[in-house]
Length: 484
Image 1 (tube, rainbow, N blue to C red):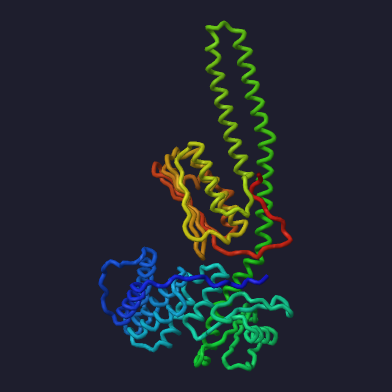
Image 2: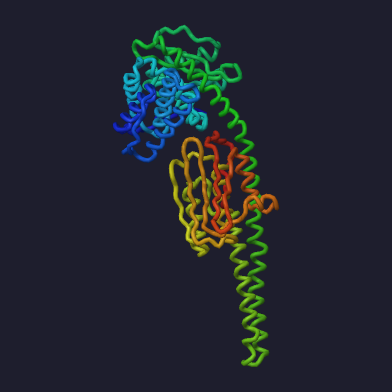
């Protein structure tokens, strides 16, 4: 399956942000203090710059604080800012290179040296390691074009000797016949080809010391000598990414099998509840009404009130039991196909919860929550259902918030209430912590769950899943978490 990445549209970097980055880089390199006046920047960009600067200062102090340590910290700051801007969708073509050039002039180093240092630092940013594999590939190739000498670059793999696949591309004319031919020769022979064009280079991306992919690029005029260095460093960064992606792909079939089996059990449970206990409750309610009418007919009118109140209470209990079981049946046999957007499915769950009058509920979405696997969508749906069920049954909350947030590295769901709360550690010790089945499924997908609660101060449940997109299996029928 071809996984060619389509370049994203990007916003221009605000001029005031460029000026702030250049100023902080220069002041850090020269050991000068910085004024702490307020930045007139969006909150997210201001946090990005502040976090990058704090990390750079920590590295400076760890290095002893001399001129070399300060300069290394300055380029760490610049690389973190450049990488963060790119991941945030900032920077039109050429803007990052111009930003690095302005910072280099302010620090007093050559533009080419600054670009290489920033490129090397950016490849090793922790944020890049957390990216889903396909987004990490996109990011590295993008940096090659924006900071390096590549005019166009593409990543190729050969699943079979006769089949070549483009896994990602960046820049102009990145998949031309010449680049494709260079990649094919390298993957077939294990050696870089002798190029008819001096502007084309190819290097191997290795996994377990074996060539697994090929980076092929065409250099800008006059920059061919530096291209191989950039490609070699990029290939070293992409090796672990491709290895991680291969592990994800190998586990995809097992993941789908496990989730499908679990969902089938839940669907069967929902059907059994509907066809069994719920029908018995309906019959019981009818028998109670009949018994009440028959007993009342045998008593004098003045004494009928003595039996009506107990029958009313029994009828209320039966009605409540019926509502609860129907809610459980609905939850485990949800009402929509998984192709439905996750945001819509969760919003429906929150609306259904609020409609029952248990508590006021709000739902918010932040960032990108698309491109999730079937398993991830099911797990996040189940976490929401279980958390809202616990709120309804135990918390006595007046308000509940459900917040779904996604970026290139992870997707995160948080359910918070203002209810009575509980002692989390005490519940763990006694084995009474709910959500156990859902927590296992989150962990199965490589995620983590955090539960924060205190008596009389509410509860917050947060589930975080790493982002990746497993390849689709055309032979597998669509999986349903819910049925109409």
